[in-house]
Image (cartoon, rainbow, N blue to C red; front, side, top):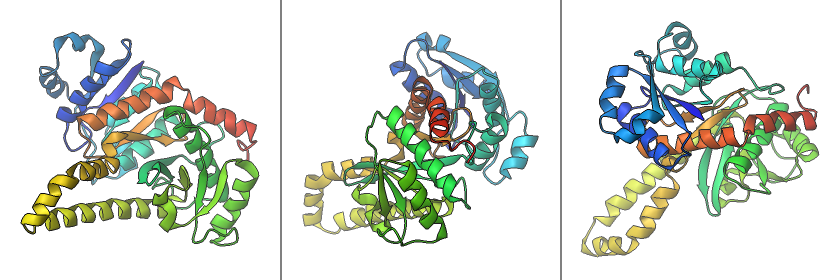
Length: 337
């Protein structure tokens, strides 16, 4: 398998991306190969820090430009033909790579993926999800920003795509799906959630029902579906709350001798709490619905995050997630709905 990696994307640059690729190859099947897309001089310099026996599992495609975070996503993708993200996605679209991974401009990657890879037949709108910690493990929230205006049929397709992705890549069965609303009762919600609820009941045997905001982290369901406007606001709120909690704990721990002593006792639990909220555990998530594998990573991704994102790309390909999505849409007769 060949995975194209945007070396220039992300805040940490080649130090994180090239090192992450190396960490992945140490554990990956022997025939996996990473195509490093970016400034060849910077890539070659970083490869000096990688054991030479792994060099044959890398190839370099020179793409010196980068799409800045303040640039217009669609315009930049069309104009910057030598940008690493543009070149990497085109390698994937042409079949020269089986997947693409980037920690660069999220908006540009979403727009570029749709332009170059197109959609899986039958998919109305691609969507992006995110993992959140819960009392019972992780919950997958979808959509978190790809679509700010969605229709009921879109939410149903989001649910189907998410269940296949999580089920196949993370080998989870009997996934419960919840619909985010303002109350658990079937008749509560706005026009979108009321109509979506009915579609979910008719098409999803594992539909749990409505889920309120206060229940998201309780782990009542494995997947929670909402439109991208709500999902994006919710995700950023969750990230902010975690940051506030961590700062408050650190501030109070250092208040006096007794709290410092107590900190030694709770340190393992605190470390586990931080790990459960750490995006690096999953590395990246796909833009579900495009006819290819485009893994979107956090801009601040470390080498460990990149390694795990590459693993997600490998699992999506080996488990034929996109093929299963297309089959499920045909089975449910939703490809022309």
